[in-house]
Image 1 (cartoon, one colour):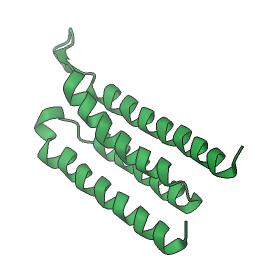
Image 2 (cartoon, rainbow, N blue to C red):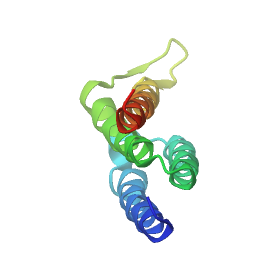
Image 3 (cartoon, rainbow, N blue to C red):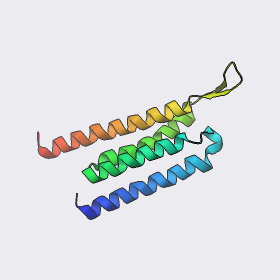
Length: 122
């Protein structure tokens, strides 16, 4: 992919990530109550997105953003909240969100490798 297309591709996915980060961090905060986890995952997704764009791995960059969004959706659907014996709040939504993110990145890596292999004809 040529450099201007890479820049547009990266900017588009960064825009999607930024919009969903804003939504998950501020608009949907009451659903999950996490302050730093959305930041941590967004930074990880941004770094993967930038590295993938520089390397010309478009599917991986899409997988990172899709993993962030999909992980959030999975966490909100299947997450559970409780109270530990000491009275503190517990939640597994951060584990589900992180796992969904990693699955999205893994799918992006695998799909990118398959696409590259197919393009080479081997």
